[in-house]
Length: 252
Image (tube, rainbow, N blue to C red):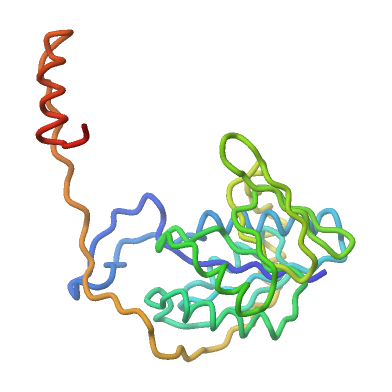
């Protein structure tokens, strides 16, 4: 079985975000870049399938700037077999339609049995690329799977259904599944894996993106929260608290 895992390079989730002078992009001068956390879960899922079936090949696919090689080497150190890097310095500005189109073309050329994505990217937080990929590829899709197994020409996915219940889905291969946090934490790279990653291939190629269908016109940081205040103590504060909730907060 061949599994393609789509991964993305994003700012670290504890980065202090600043808006660039153009007002439509981020100031990246002091940002630390990492592999998007949900993509780590997707890669771990693929590697666990490979652990159970040694004839499995795991290919990581990234659309991003040339510096994203670092994140791809991390994936290879964790156990992926090879990587495909679609180099595009403007990748962070692409909308989901453009991104999915470029990824779908590369995936179709690989003809995998299974495609895995994180449920969303930590920077854009949209969760659209996986769904659009399944449409473009013509693959059945399950989103936000917590567990996944593959055998006998199908995958079985477990996902939360609300109220503490779960759903079990079976999909024929080829299929696409987006992954959320489940029972298994992403593994750490071993020294042997880090050394082996240096010899594993990264197939890099430049890509030309089509015209954007969505354009960012302005970025703004959220307004600072107002400081809290104490309106009284004990039962005597109830009346004033109710008044503030009704007249100022307008929540009752």
